[in-house]
Length: 292
Image 1 (cartoon, rainbow, N blue to C red):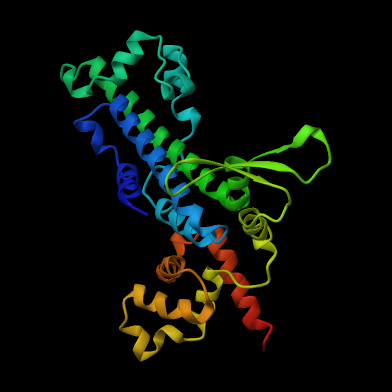
Image 2 (image 1 turned 120 degrees about the horizontal axis):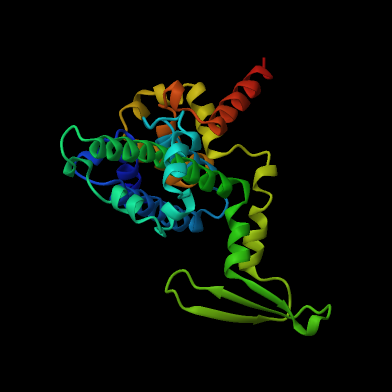
């Protein structure tokens, strides 16, 4: 995955300095663009993972979570502006503002107003309040999106999105028409099959039980290996993470990319650990405790 959009988004969360040479309207457009592109890139990344996606998604969440956006803001932070200008959040997000005064206010740099004027103070305060609000709004939106891809196994979602299953003549037959988007060359393909044993569907169905498997996830396996001291080994210690991942992949039979991400997550600081990753840590600790 190209992390350019994610890094740009996280940089925008750090402070409101961007408003010095910009406007709220422009920065809102930038934030929306980053979030759209991140979601698009994540979805492309999930397709080949086929259900083995929790480690990757946790890693993206861990990159966003520690960002220095103001976490205490909520709708009350901008309520006075919404009330005063008779606008709502959906109108602002959809760029469908009927209030010309408000539209001009968010699309004008506050420094263009006369120094020490009430108009300048209002523009600065309003744009700052909304910027902080929308930073948190888009963080929540993005994290909710990422978490939803774990809750609904993405392979199952692919089945619903790319396969339209129609029972012929509404009768209980084994004849179905499957229409699938070809991910490789983006050409639609229709397949007529007289039985239910289609390899693609079986592969997707198999991942539906991913969460019920007793096998450790990549995160959990790497946490266990770390606790067993494997990364303190003289050979592994000097290796870059990509080579470590390649070697460990041959041992545990997991995707190298996921393993690389999981290795990086071993270095997370306490404040960067997500709820999901903490569950993995706790599970491995219980596993080791039960061996005593």
